[in-house]
Amino acid sequence: MYTTGSAAIALCNPKSPSNVGAVMRAAGCYGASAIYYSGTRFERAAKYHQDTRDINKQIPLTAVDSFTGLGAPHQKLICVELAEGAVPLPDFVHPQDALYIFGPEDGSIEQSIVDLADAVVYVPTIGCMNLAATVNVLLYDRLAKQNREIDHGKLIKQSRDVNNRLVYKSP
Image (spheres, helix red, strand yellow):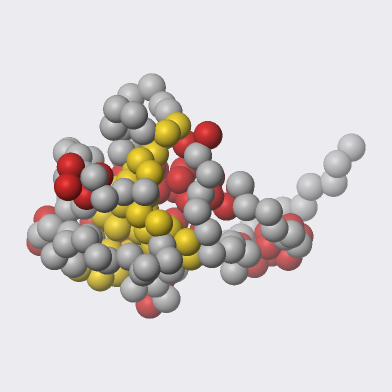
């Protein structure tokens, strides 16, 4: 994978299996190493509704009772939430290794978790995005801000669907 460091995702009581499926797909696209979730709503819901390219076989999706103590000692705990005092994502410098905790769409991350965070970040939008969209934006921002060399031609060929063989020749 072309990302540096490690990124894990933690979802606070997600309610939508389609959102969790889309989060799993984002994790696969942007090189996240694991996904954790709390609560019972997801488990009561149906299996994933999104095409995750069998990402659930590559990236573990693990139910946890608590996010406290979940991250490795070297990981920074980053909460992603519309919270007063949060750092706007365009200004945020991602740590090398991070556990990103996302709040539920119909609530917030518990204050006790926010109090343990190394940083709280928000995505500046008009209104709020859904969970999967927020995870995608954050992970893309992390990737875009990394200093890395990419063979873009090779990456496009590896990433696109088998039905896509488009070639653009600049004028």
